Length: 361
Image (cartoon, rainbow, N blue to C red; front, side, top):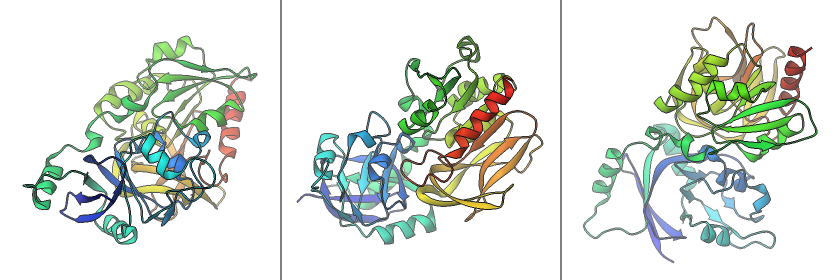
């Protein structure tokens, strides 16, 4: 079995067996704490530009099913595992999946030790070297990793957003414009239970959205830095123009983008929230819900005149959701549709639809 080496920008080097293509991969290394739902994670557009480390040791044991894909493509750049189950009695085997989609997988790695390292020092740029040149030392490779621009310096949303308008027709009369920043299929399925969904590219103008005559606007999840200049000049600008005209609901990256449109700021977390077991407290009720999350940035609402924090992360007190004090605008940092994860907060889609009906009656 061929071997490869993982090198982090701080110089940490780990050699391990490699399955899949023997090529060199660069990305941000992040960890996911879910015990199940690996197929959904591999195909979640929020992972664009990232090398994914799964903390749960056994991955692949129940196979891979294309109907669980959260997008049309595999989004991770590479995979790091402790104990892969390459063969499966049901579904597509992990071996076949990695081969079909050309994804390198470094395995037999001490994922616990590596996760603790990332928690201590934060997520960082990393590379997997499948074909190392003889003259390359780990120190020289780490220096090149440090010198390489972070994946978030690119507009990753542009890579995963739809290119044209897509209409998801249903029997419902209400219409929702879904601004696609890298939307998961399960979000579209959740919205289709209540309305016809019009999926538009992330850079759609306010004038173009108005022509679609929506009853509400949803801003989806997605990858990268919400305050990227390309996002500020397109999605944020569009939402700022449309504030007060439509009910709005932001999810994950959409939550951060909506916050930016309302005048707040964002910042990068040390190691992010990725997994299906994150506790979030709903402040008005005092109840705690277990949520599914996948993000590396958070919203700073210290100077807030027009919004109220509705949800807080139980572990680090970061903002998990807010509502506008006078407009029908709400957002959450977590994923109400789960997929994978608990359905504790799926009621938020129904609550959002109530706000649409209240506005039109």
